[in-house]
Length: 118
Ligand SMILES: [Mg+2]
Image (cartoon, rainbow, N blue to C red; front, side, top):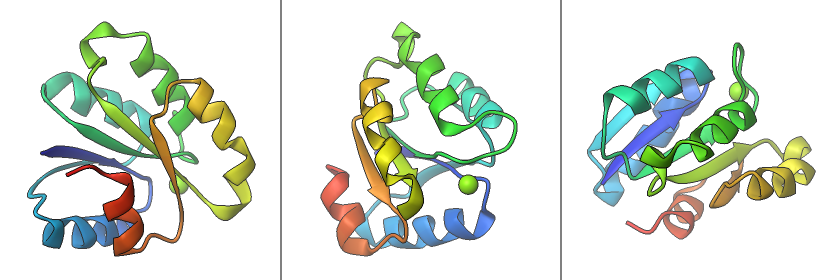
């Protein structure tokens, strides 16, 4: 199981890493903005899941999602959008754009377990 964590907050990435470790996920990649995420995806084939923050500088999560979903090489990549409570209503837009699921912050171990099929 290879997972890419995309969030502009290093703290959030650290928290997610801490939650995924005990679930048995050791192959974890990180990106701090949308452009970095696209670069990491291109350079690391076989990523199973991307946890994708919505609000990020340079290129936001929705922008990444749209670019990834028109690229056939990523057809097996599962994308889980991570939104804040305030952005919850935008989730429909993300699902329409091809997100597989979403998580509303703050994360708990149970929510992570529920949304990822590990
Ligand atoms: Mg953010």
